[in-house]
Image (tube, rainbow, N blue to C red; front, side, top):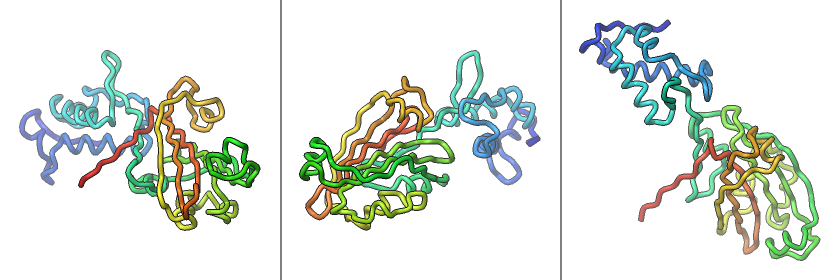
Length: 249
């Protein structure tokens, strides 16, 4: 058990190494969450229990918990307790990045699971979207991406073989489609749209969510070499994900 000494006065505020005690408590709570002691949705010890554990004032513990709540690490439920909040993973919209790079940049572990990889003759609608004749060969992949073991994206991607002829030969357990395509079909331009949709059953199963839960759906078209290179639909569980970006001129 971790214990910090204090008498409820000024000694509560600073430890011998000059680290504020409320920060030490925050660090302790964050470390326990990261270690999996408390997972998303789990209740953490009460403020009174933390006061007893750390030997500090209620005000000091309250500050640590209040700050973690404002940072959306914890969430309070009136009359129930304080819980580990569901984390919202973030993606940028102003540049196309590999989801693996975004996950690793947060200091988290990425892995992917290939669900489908096939050669398909383009339907009339799909051929029109690629500006190709009906029946033209297309590559199709479905991949689930995980962050720290939590599914955060289903990537449903169609690829023009004229732009990326070796797509089917890639090992998508070790390289993401984006990482391969940025080399094989250098980006010339892109367009995208975002909408909130309920996930169909197959998507919900891959994301380990209920079909009633909304998803953020990013649809993106990329161009390379004067051609439509890819059409991708990326499903994200709305309660775990957010899009963000900034722009300066």
